[in-house]
Every structure is written in structure tokens, then in C-alpha cells.
Length: 355
Image 1 (tube, rainbow, N blue to C red):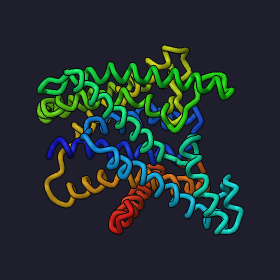
Image 2 (image 1 turned 30 degrees about the vertical axis):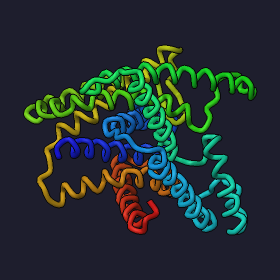
Image 3 (image 1 turned 60 degrees about the vertical axis):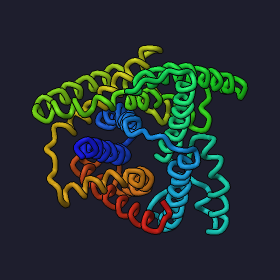
Image 4 (image 1 turned 120 degrees about the vertical axis):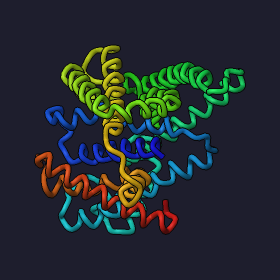
């Protein structure tokens, strides 16, 4: 119970940070947004690794790829009337056509969006997570076939890390060769595979440390001020990374402004520090007693996928109607409102078996 609530706290906090970040200008001058982007997506992949459960390929397709189709259709179906009512100046040419040609163009472009890494909004996270889980399945199968398996599972996870590192290197080299062949002059991201490779260390680390979580929780349950103090210290370390390395982005596969390989070290260092910071903040919070509070937390965490998929439309409308320079308090309240609307939408879609 306690362990699940801890991760629920962390997931809700990370989702709120995603919504909050999408309400502001993506320029390097927006310091708070740059700070959030250091760790909010690494945190999702880290927690996904901690919650790893073996699943079949068909189950992964149903749970991760089908929602992408739903969110893509939902986004454009709502953008169409909003564009024609003048509430938003969208840059999608299909919005200017009739409704039937618009539908044909949207669904014809869906496959291209999967390949060209654009037009899917935050749903790219689900595609990247699908690749990460498939690669993890391959690594687990290889580890067991090679006999690297102990009772506690740590040896097999360690082998998987080395296996995945080699596999990532091979995929990276293949992407580099593909980019040269296509005339891009370097590496070319295809089908969000590059995002998955960038996220793989966080997922593998989450799988590896999940066994330590009960003991860590038991200790911090009696030392919550220590957890808060460590979280503040880690926030300072992330701030140092923002100062020296600038903005990073898992979506854009941007490691920062420092030269290679320093930018990679800064990027993963700030990602892990920020992830631990959020988990420690979750540990420092008092636990809700059984009742409506716990139910709300569970519901907010269970609808996380819906929040990530639905929120982008509302963030775009808010940004284009209210502007990008809202005070942070207003931005936080808007984030809570958008989160709540997305939870209700997720419940509706889940009720009718769409998600």
C-alpha cells in the first residue's frame, strides 16, 4: 500500500509538471520550464521501470500504441472547430478544408506522424515506452537463455543493462548510417527510436533499484525532514546543471549545450538528480488516511496516461488565448484545472471501453 502510494504521489507530481511546462514559452529564458524539463520525462521512465511487469507483445500494443491513435484523433477533432471559431491559429493545413477531407487527411497523416516524429504531441512518450519495453523483453529473454539469473533477479538486470547498452550502440550506429544515406549529415531519429534509446538508462535503473524501495521507505518514514532536506539539495544540483548545460529535451533528443560527452553526463546527472528529488519529496509528504483522499490520489495516478494524452489540446488553447507569460501561481492553478478535466475525460473514455 505505502509503496504504491509513494509512486502515485510521484506520478501525479510529474504529470502536473508536464502540464505546467506546456503552458509556457519553450525558450531558454523560461528558467522554471528549463528546470522542469531536466527530469520530468526521466522520472516517468524511471517509475515505469520500477513498475515493470512482463507482458505479451499484443498486450503492449493494446495498452501503449492504441491510446496514441485515440489521443491523435481526439486532438485534431477538437482542434478543427476551435480553429474555425477563431480561438486558435493552427498551422495544420487540413484545418482549412471541409470536414470530410479534413478527416481523410488526418487519418492518412497518422502513419507518417509515427515515422517522422511529429504531430503526436506528448503521445510520443507511449511510443518510446513501447520500444523500451520491447527491448527490455529481448534483454530479459537473452539473459535467461545465457543463464544469467539469480533468485533476487539483480544479476539478470545487470546483464540486461550491458546487453541494452550494446544494443543501443548498434541502433545508434544504424541511425547514423541512415542519416548519412538520407542526406542529413548525421544521426536521424526514426519512429521515436532515438527517444527510446535516450530513455533506456532511466528505465533500466528503475528496474534495478525497485528492490531497495521498501527498506528506503521504512527508514525515511521516521526521518521525513531528512528526505525533504535531501530533495532541496538535489534541486540545487539540478539548478547547477541548468546553469552550466542549459536546456535538455528527451523529445528533441537534446543533451544540452556543453560539448560531447560532457553534455551527456550533465543531462543524465540532472535527470537522475531530479528524479530522486521528486521521489524524496513524495517520501517527505504525510500519508493520507484511508478514505476519499487516498481514492483521489489513486484515481489521479491511474488516469496518468489520459492526462498525458489529453492535456496538450487544452494547453495549446490556453497558451493561444491567455498568452505565454502568466504568473506561476496562475499557471499552477490552470495546470490543476486541466489535470482535472483530463481525469474526467479518461474516466469517460475508460467507461465506454475506448481506453
